[in-house]
Image 1 (tube, rainbow, N blue to C red):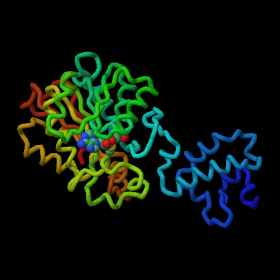
Image 2 (image 1 turned 135 degrees about the vertical axis):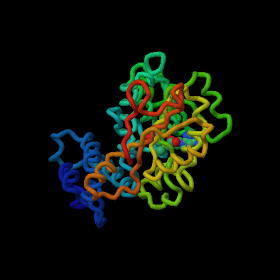
Image 3 (image 1 turned 90 degrees about the vertical axis):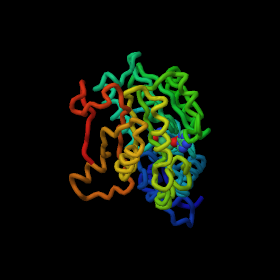
Length: 337
Ligand SMILES: C[S@@+](CC[C@H](N)C(=O)[O-])C[C@H]1O[C@@H](n2cnc3c(N)ncnc32)[C@H](O)[C@@H]1O
């Protein structure tokens, strides 16, 4: 057996060794990409007592297989087959969109608003929420798990996404409060079936919002493995966003809210698009920067080209003509952008 193949588990995983004789690729490079996650899964198959023992050929094969997937630029979330979001462990499978940490901020904003504004909680003690583009179910399932009275209708046009959300809901025992519906929001009349469940208190979505011309700049991990339909929002990233907004008044209750994750260029685009559609009675009431954007504002150092922001859009209710400051109850949190 070549020398490098007799490496111990500790050497292979901690220091990095050349797994294939004559192959210059060093696993330390691989590990430096996501050392914690990859090491964690690799170590899972090794009892501590074995860390100083030579690896078996099965273990080497296993490490080699995982390493070669990573070297082909497969995202670590797909290699591991699961990923954490808001404290939930979700199954991941290509090509379903991998939930990003910034989307946790969208969930946190919704939770904050529901807690602070009882009107959003709905008549049944918890809100009825529609999620457009549920992917793996990350957003819907975390809202369900943190709002025990809530109910969610999760829609997606991708079959793989629908199946994965179903599987994740079952794994987390949340299947009784979620309806998972295959639905393409760009198809006329597609929303009619949603009316069966009554007007929604909230719509939440992390839609495909990347500007089409920016798609080429995405990392190879994203371009080669994730569904482009989950990312590409068309010329100005607004294709799905405008469909959601145009259809929202049909399913949203009066004074219901829409929370969206968007590109940093979208607050202005969405605002002027809404002005051009007064018939929808939707108003952009608040914008939030994500963590990176907030840090940039303080340090001025970071480049945040693709950093999203979050929008809160409200349907005019009975208080339609009230100035924001004169509305009763807690005000929407407004963060200047
Ligand atoms: C950016 S991913 C978000 C997934 C998930 N909500 C998350 O944050 O991890 C966008 C999702 O929207 C779905 N989608 C794209 N176009 C759609 C359409 N026309 N109708 C419904 N869903 C759509 C995609 O399949 C994808 O799962």
